Length: 441
Ligand code: F6P
Ligand code: MG
Image (cartoon, rainbow, N blue to C red):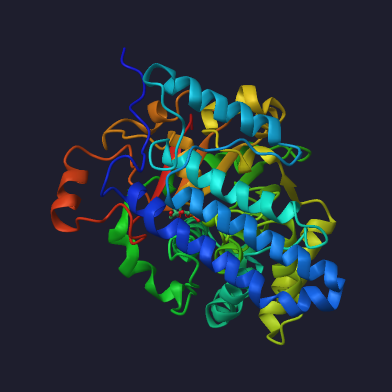
């Protein structure tokens, strides 16, 4: 049997991977440098001269990184000791071993896109941790916050919708509940349009009221396994004994508006008793511009809590309470910010794999998670999702993702070709979405 296809890479001139490495990644680095410049006086106020020196150092490390990228230099090992340094350097050696026959070295425009893109964010982090006392500075924080503030109207609409629903949730019949569940699932899907790395770090906020647009957006859902999610969770609910639990895990993606949509989904799961416990997974370091860290997670809930809008602040209070009572658990693990595809998890992070195996359902939010689920390879559109997962089956899983990279599997014969003919860049514009499920029901 043939092995999995080759990885997407910037070596394919003109591909989305190529354009990302050539244009988008340097833009993100330039923005990061600019952010450090703009915080100069803040660093000085906080740390005096040492703060200024640190700012200079971080800027020079980032400029060096941008130069390495733009001149396609070999990828160099990480130097600063951190929890994951050895794993990164081993991965680089592995990439090197793949090239030994050709005598080549891993490079930005040659190696797998997934690897070099993850590596860039890890090097940004290295530049910061090498620059004390500003070594805990989140270079993307203000962009994430801006996205949250600019999405206020949609957040108000969403929280109001949820609180309205709460009033009648106990009285809903099966069909009504299913309908509401599908609505919040779709809100969480379209919330994934708000990733900030695709825009080169420009904010994309959510201005329209999503709830009123769901019907119009339905034709853009290319794989729709929402029914599977409903059967799985409603069966769990029916069969569950008094003392037992149903745990849904959500592997989070972006902070700001998308995170609020995910928390709304998590709240509905609990209040409808489709689940009894939710585990959230976030990132340990700033990642792909907008991804959620523990700090972002707490910050968003705190902001909601202190909103002067009654229903928004009610959401904040309720959600803080879910955390306090242990119904919501936030966890992080360095695996999520490694370059490995998820099929490597059992041997790279067996503890995390074992944790995920205890879930009844795992929701993977966003595009990067999809790339890691499928190994970011040039799969044919009709290859079954199960096959592309390459042995990664910790529990039933579902990817909830808007398409922003040239990888998509599990389509109907002809579906991909038809889309290519009518919308040539359908894979990368974030306009289409999927709910793609794998697992026994
Ligand atoms: O380069 C754009 C991009 O970084 C994609 O490559 C990546 O998969 C995506 O944006 C991140 O999107 P998301 O936040 O949905 O994972
Ligand atoms: Mg993201």
